[in-house]
Image (cartoon, rainbow, N blue to C red; front, side):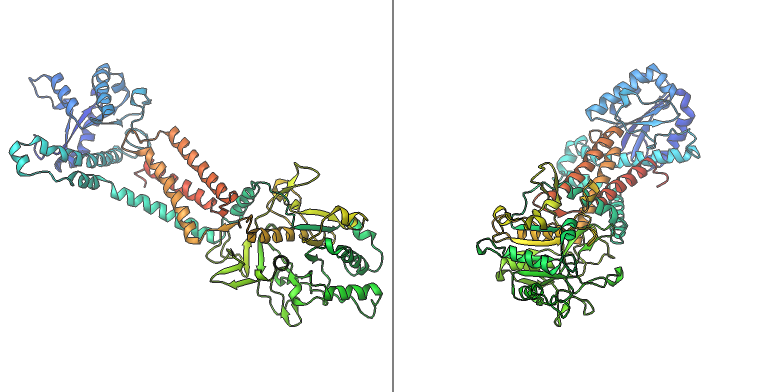
Length: 627
């Protein structure tokens, strides 16, 4: 045994071409630190003693080496002797798991040879020692030596396990090998420093992405993906608890009399009388989604229809009307409610639209500012029009319970609200005040065109002209329904964009949005066939989700440089594996969204950490001297 070598030393066999002898000398000099530590015993045919059989010594060392280094160059590949003797035997032992074969690229040439396929060559960046990409040979040899040290450190524990078996019987009997020794040696050989670096990269990138997300940098892209997933919603039947009466431009133009709003008093009175004409076919609730911020009966308007309409609005408990809270930041001062209707039969009609004008959230209740027109008779209108309609329809047992600690509850149904800890893709700058939930649009198909499916067909729709026809009450059932009355003439009220607008669907009237919101509430509390609400995870769960995909991305990249041949990925394998996992990320996000689970999990931040961590690990692996 050579000086400073122990029985646990790793034996290294170096195969090279004679034309590369000077490079061999430089290389072995860089291995001298490992030799002096006693962890390796490097040998090559330059150490054959005079007067001995060289071929026999080469064969012995080739068969006993733990690591076989192939110093590759064009001359090495051209040598039949090296190829038939060294490479063939080395690969045979490598495939059997008896030795580790490591190609070292000395001079530039095409080394992608089938027999060496799957081996990780050094330097890791694939640039030969003498190529111009290295400032000098020492830098390249230093990196190669460091990688060989890692391989040696991994093999030493395995070598130690063999030591007791190679000693005498007296030694093995006097010093028994503990059962836990193999496990301890494996733990010692594990690259804990590399693991900590990997975890540091993943955690750092996740922290950066989460911070950028909360600052709103990804909000536009997250909301775009929200819309794409919403468009994958399966179609559902129309909500038969609702009937929408649209006041079209033609309906408005046909009216006679003085207009103080979209509908004259005479037209509105006729409409309400028609709906309440037959007791056996009356709606349970009537939602008047039309602004009337003026008194019906005044000195100027004291005709019989004015008095009758005023009295009907005051006394009919089934009529729910609207006001608009307004938003001074948007130059919207709001709109007052009809003065004849008491506060308990009023709801605000305000929508929450994002920066693109798309309605993705539903506000159920809010603390109305005193400056708002929605203060009626010294009382605030604090509930949304949709919530008031749903509560009136459901009955007194469904009075809401408002408490931030227990969310908002109707009956036995709890509404998970958006707030500081449940933001989804919304940034810190997004106003989540009040009781807000995500709007889970119901997509239904038109009765006339079964292939025309859109959120605008959430319920059956008729026009004011249809109501005025003599056969309306025999053709349509109103019994125990919610009838929503609203204007669809865009000259009176601008339409609203939905997540489906980017798919080619036109914006829809506000009364249809209200129908969507009422339907969501009714369906959520339905005990027979509940329709789940769309929710978001708590922020800490979202961070763990993002971190998980970051770790997956880094782990796949690490397999590109695995020291275990069976686990090592080729470039093609890396691309395929990464692509499959990335598609799995998107599919899992989509499944959570459209199935009854109904969670909006973060896709964009997870995709960024997945790609980012994988990219950093690959960069460090291919450019260790820079990292």
